[in-house]
Image (cartoon, rainbow, N blue to C red; front, side, top):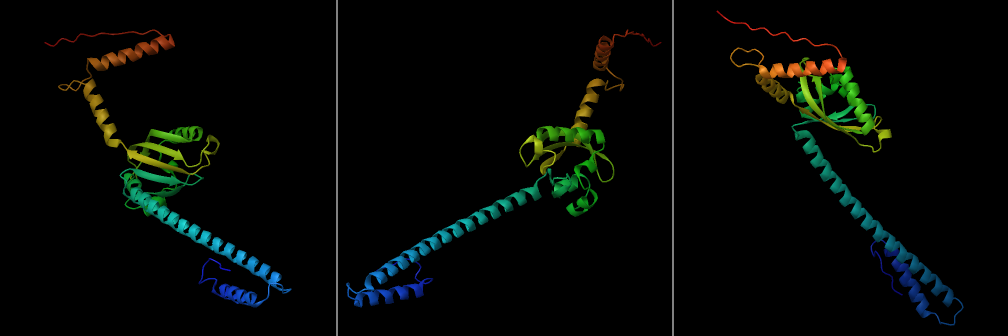
Length: 247
């Protein structure tokens, strides 16, 4: 009777099977113990085969688990590389809203030379907001929707100077009922230069380049706003026109 399996791991068991088969071969088929010994040997061989299959399954599962761990480690390395090298600020918060980790760009945006220094002085996103009302609005949107996309706010740098940013945040747990008490990942984009450019363009569009005075476009916008305010409030509106002639 032959048995397949791990010959190294079950070497002693194979020896016992061979000895039992030899004894069984010397016994007469009509001997009283022949059938009993044959049955025990068959059962032992079956059990050994099952053990071999279990060992093979365990080896395959271990190989798959090792491959999965290698894949996870590779993805973790890629994520860590992106996290560290991203030009945008990236952060992750715990369930209590405090920072769990931030990347170097996040620290640099707010004037800190290192992540450790930033984390020591800034425990949460709330500590960076210039306006508590703006933070409450941001938090309310996050709690209601579980995510915030490109929320514009004025935050503070280390030296107190304002910085315009766009914040996009996503709850890691799903479901609006868990959004407030969930861990979050977010991206902070410094748009201060963009805002300054828009303000400069707006100023140029509303002033005369020679005199620096407000131009016709500014007058029309201001007049339109006053007319709309008059219509909504029901109060009268007066307009005074002066013609200054030089001599």
